[in-house]
Image 1 (cartoon, rainbow, N blue to C red):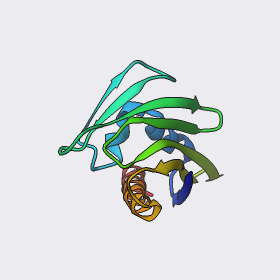
Image 2 (tube, one colour; image 1 turned 135 degrees about the vertical axis):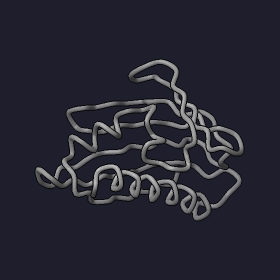
Image 3 (cartoon, one colour; image 1 turned 180 degrees about the vertical axis):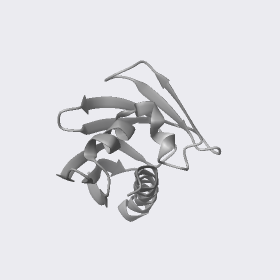
Image 4 (cartoon, one colour; image 1 turned 90 degrees about the horizontal axis):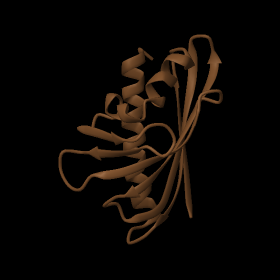
Length: 139
């Protein structure tokens, strides 16, 4: 099993950034490559289908949502990516009243690709997400 962590500081209050992240169906607001997102259900157990405009969609399930710890965990239910067992957590750490750090971690098992190849794909999505959060929150 592979594990990866990326983090980014944002010059915005943690509560404001958390409102964006905790919106499970709103990932397209900060990950530009997500062209559409539909959600079935609500709260833990909700399933979102991510449309990237080309190729098969990625389907993810909300596994945990903790407003007190400002942490959201989701898993991939189905994906064209050559891996299995992908589980990811986004966590906010308040650094001050106007600054926070977003941690985006995941575990996965490569299946038909190398760990390095998959890490590059995941890093691309996370980097895009961090840039989108900074743009949304002026950070």
